[in-house]
Length: 249
Ligand SMILES: [Zn+2]
Image 1 (cartoon, protein in one colour):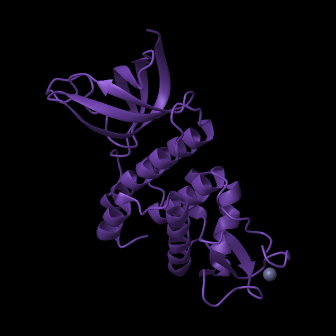
Image 2 (cartoon, helix red, strand yellow):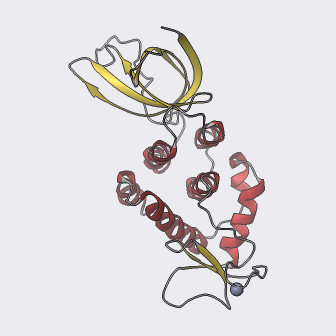
């Protein structure tokens, strides 16, 4: 049984039997894995503190032939979003972890997704405003999956988009004001478009200095939620938690 060690993001964990847990984690080199953490539910476990969602950790595990489950040897937390973050930010932790979990391919390298997740964890800990971070994360996640419509040209007339636009998540279109349809889609103001433009070039740690007025934040939150729902064909469980705790999304 070969032993692998990787940088990883913990996505979630659940009970297994009396004393163990299954931990789902995204590695930087081998995609998403599920591993058994033996004895993780005992008081004096070597896994204590490791399995919190979105913890960045060093993990070591044994690969087992013909079995989907790996066996975890250790989880050493490196950076936890529980450190120095407020209640509102913590409400989003499960949401980010669930989004990564839904989109990360099983046992197939997803290093860009890992890097996005890791930089978001660091930004939560650094106190970057959580609304801007959430819109940024959604944008990049959807872009990495190839489901974010092009935002610079109108998908109907092909002209460059200036000022305002409309996104129709179900149809996957992004249109100029002249082509927008009154029935479908979410209107995006010039402030929303300006944020998307900035999101293309800045690192999440720099979001504190990128403007996102509340109305634009709402517009993008609605557009992204509908895009996610369209592509996953379901509503995420954590959306309700975020809504109840923060009023967001
Ligand atoms: Zn147009």
